[in-house]
Amino acid sequence: MILLILLGAGFMMSVDFSILNVALPLVGEGVGLSLPALPWIASAYALPAAGFTLLFGRMADLLGRRRLFLTGIVLLAAASLLGGFATSPETLLGARVLQGLSTAMSLPAALSLLTTTFKEGAARDRVLGLNGALLSGGFTIGALLGGTLVGLSGWRAAFFINVPVAMIILVLTPLVVAESKVPERPKLDVPGAVTVTGGLLAVVYAVVERSFLAGLVGIVLLAAFWVIELRTTVPLVPVRILKRPTVKWGNYAGLVVFSMETAMIFLMTLYLQKVLGLNPFVTGLVFGVPGLAAVLAGPIAGRLIGRYGYRKVLVTGMATQSLATVPLIFIGSTRVGLIVLIPALLIGFFGHVTAIVAYTVTGTSGLPDGEQGLATGFTSMTQQVAITIGIPVLGAIAATQVSELSGIHVALTVNVIVTWVSIALVWIGLRLPAGVPTEPSRSL
Image 1: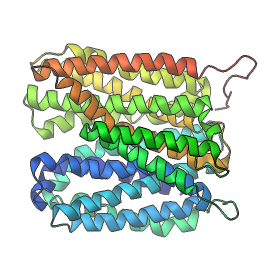
Image 2: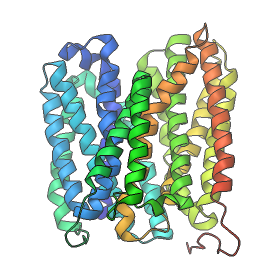
Image 3: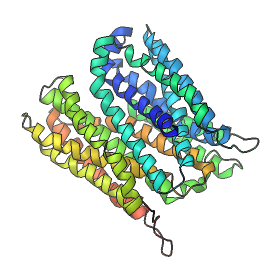
Image 4: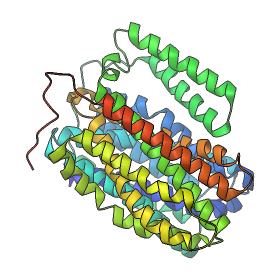
């Protein structure tokens, strides 16, 4: 029941995210949002989801994980109702901001409840494998069913579908999920919270809007945050946690894995629709069928980590994802390219899900229960930031070329280079010092 509730919440959010992507043009028409402003439907969600995740992950440790999880689900239900009934751009974007905040509350809290319920080892690896499979499956199922649902019931269904599921979660959670123990008189590092949240918001905004000034402000705020954490007696993020290779390199790997794969999907969507002239329904099938097959990678990854360790599985997943991207650099402008694309997507998605599970296990390993909310906040923040920045960065690289196809080829080349440089860094960074036992030998 604990797995059903906590994994179900993440699955619901991933389904909703992809359903709304399918409905973006209809949503814009429904509330009078202009075509150039449509990306803000995604950005209004992504900014708070990325900017507040670390803060709420730490608050889950200090105030109670179940409490923050339930608060996030309540906010999600309210925001979904607001979005479903929206009649103006302002109301709709406000609802998306609240949905982003609810994600920042719910996901790290749910993940930390999982990592503290299932102790480090084979059981936790398998649970995180299921989590990765369901998140991937949610995105895929949302893309496949989104068009049908929106076509039958209208774009508002993309919001309303969350409400009954949220109600079920709110009823069941107090019955089966115990509240975490919190320290007496918890204190919140307010200066640290303000600077890290403001810095993350500014950096993500800078990437989305290509704003040098916002990027500079973000860097200054994050530098101030680092200084504050070094000096305060009750840090929001204990600096020692960032010295752990598992936290540092696990999250770096997650940033690369998510940003490069998200950008690849965006570029291949352009290829299918702009170069090959396929319609959105066929595009959904091209991505959906390999995506459903790759869901199997989640449980398999959990078992592989138990046998070979997170380091080997993480770099193997990253390598598989990148190797599957290589043939896409050479596909042409005819539909023969589908013969290459579909198998490449299947292999690449399999590696992607494997890497997701491995980076989550890596980033949460070797930490006490009292810091699991912080650790899962890091991994969730990494995911949200990566999803937000991958498309603008590689999209801008693709735009430097005259033709769309050549731009796609150049951007995918950069994708592969970045991933392989990162694989080398992660492999070296996670190498254990001499005399330290190898990472866990775990019974299956």
